[in-house]
Length: 226
Image: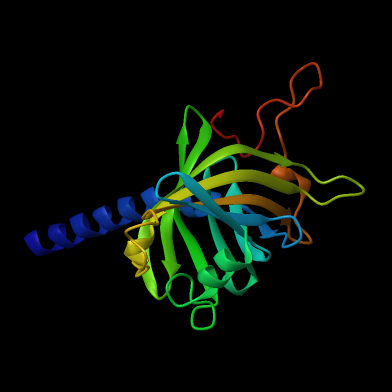
């Protein structure tokens, strides 16, 4: 009898565990799927020489995918940056950025961010936690998000989301230690995201709440004010 009671107790614990997980899985199953628009999504970087002179550049091609369920505030995003498309503020800086001391684009043609959690504060998207892979090294990072908003589909346009994300990393964490005496270790990466819903996604999934007066209230994917 004790054995039977132990089995029933274990089954009850298992059932509670399954039920506690189901709401999250169900909510994520209702997420809208998006693809980052490579023509509109832009990525850039900035670092400093002697702490006084900024060196800036951008990547001409950024792609990826995103899923988001506004009701449960669950989502994920994957951003792929083509490092071979890098352009810098001068020919000398661009050559250095492409070389082995920095992005080494011939050997490592891609930089990749994968999210693990969307973080909300006061109902607004504050940040996205995840990992960044660059030059075969993976480090935990956090994207700080601003100006995020989503729009429902219209007769002319698909549903879409936009956001600005900023990421600060140490280049030495990714094996880029050259010129440490003159070039700062901290690198700021900015990503202006434009994500368009996949074909077949319904307006209901990306719907935005409407006030009694008919104006749009908080966006589906709200962000913290700058």
